[in-house]
Image (cartoon, rainbow, N blue to C red; front, side, top):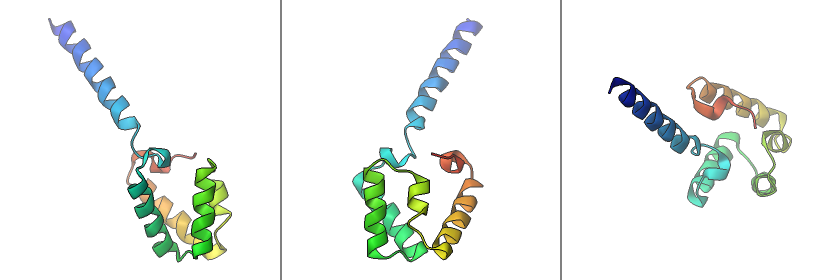
Length: 98
């Protein structure tokens, strides 16, 4: 009986991990969540409208962080790196590379 409960608990935890694994990636976000994230980036990094459009196109083409970083000025890239470092210290997947 004890073994059955342990197996059931393991299966349940694997299922929960799988369900949570899909959250957090940019590709998994709704359009509204993407728009909100882009607005926060625009405000925090003081992005131009042209930069925002370039970033949207990069994401639509499947590009990653390095392509997006190339669109930023040196000062914006510094702010972005600092923000990513702060968020990465909180844990989760934000610290991983694409």
